[in-house]
Image 1 (cartoon, rainbow, N blue to C red):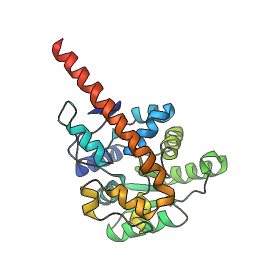
Image 2: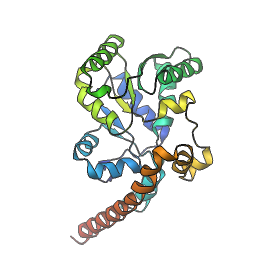
Image 3: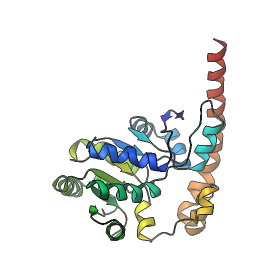
Amino acid sequence: MKIFGLDFCQCNLDAGAELVVEAGIKRQKCLVVTPNVDHIVKLSDDEGMRNIYRQAALVFADGMPLVWLSKVLPGKGLPARVTGADLVPLICRKAAQEGLKVFFLGGNEGVAERAAKRLRDKYNGLMIETYSPTFGFENNREINAEIIGLCNQFKPDIFFIGVGTPKQEKWAWSQINKLDTGPMVCVGASFDFIAGTIRRAPLLFQRIGFEWFWRLLQEPRRLSKRYLLRGPRFLFLSIREFWLQWQREISMGSG
């Protein structure tokens, strides 16, 4: 389903994970993104980021407002929210069953390894390599060469990157042809949630679309701009998207 110029996968969480795992089995080198409200606002200002998202092989809606918007647009709508935080453990469980290798790039020092240990303990036989880069790594040739070397030695079937948007998407897109890997999945703060360094919102908050409020309460200084300033812009963009799509639908019907 096309929303904001992006081709969203009309699937639930389990089906989304299966799509990524299938790409991993085939070692299909591609980009997987999980846009939320904040990402959509950034896309409207960043042409480079917008072009990368439009070329992604799989686009999952990480945000209930996107799912709600899809329900009032022409078409069947998106069936469910598919978050990076939910995809990572589910894909890792399926990867362990299929004998696939995964790579974690991101998180503060020790976070990715702690997340990997928790998943290894939970899913017997899971093979994970990790790397927690320093701030500004994307502009450091030596660090990039180290990451590429480690990845190409390990040869992961699925590569997760969680260093924040748009850095993770831009880095993945710029390096994808240098990496011996399958799909590259951009997952934001997922490693922190799995490692327990950031507590995720209770299920009730997630289901009613208020996970953003929970995160704002936890990290008000860092996230206030994201939710309190860019959030209202998403409402404006949504109204415009609603108007444009229904105008197009009416024009096609009358034609």
